[in-house]
Length: 74
Image 1: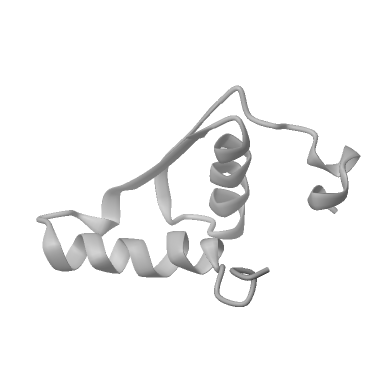
Image 2 (image 1 turned 90 degrees about the vertical axis):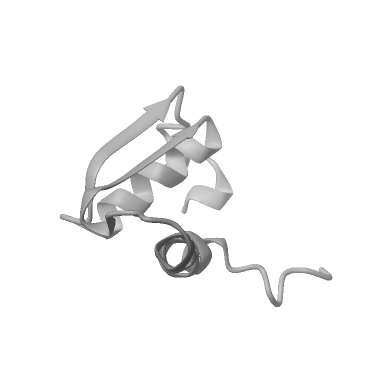
């Protein structure tokens, strides 16, 4: 609260941001990559796993690789 109602990072990263990039930049969405560091590395890995075949490259620098050992990873 108070942002929880509108906080949708997953749909933002998977849908809204790529659409904005494609609309405003000469990007080739057939050759997307995703990367992150620490918690962002975990996010990059999970987004890539949820979208098989979408990304040509996935990079995670020091990712949180065992999220099942904490409540937010369940």
